[in-house]
Image (tube, rainbow, N blue to C red; front, top):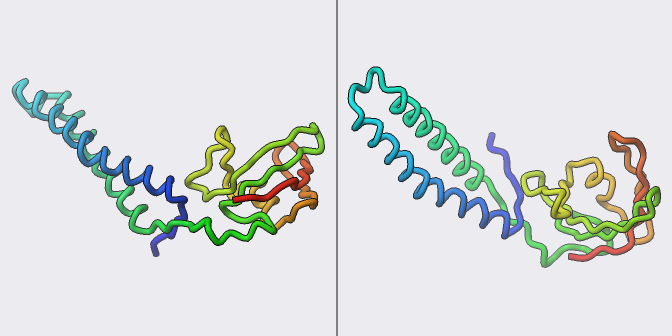
Length: 157
């Protein structure tokens, strides 16, 4: 059974762009490598040719996987997000009560998570701990480093 994945519009567009680049530039580059290796003579003992054919197989496998992901992708609509509680696609301003610092997180699907840009997965310990909380509530979240308490300061889209 195919696994449905949820993306923001930007995340889905990024995947489509990557797939297009692999199909055009990626395939062109591999074809060029194979042609150059073929021009070097005997294919039975040509390591460059074997390496280029292997790279071609890996590229086609990656293209196939991306096509499958895109075929099962759904776009999340952020226009009807309930900002009274934390949900996927919510942007949450939280205060870490242990270190007394404020952080902004956007809760996204697992595939779009990027901690450096403040996008955390709803399946991560922090994401799970924040889901369903309201402004003013304190989320006690067990992480590998121990217990962290986050106060929900603000929820937006």
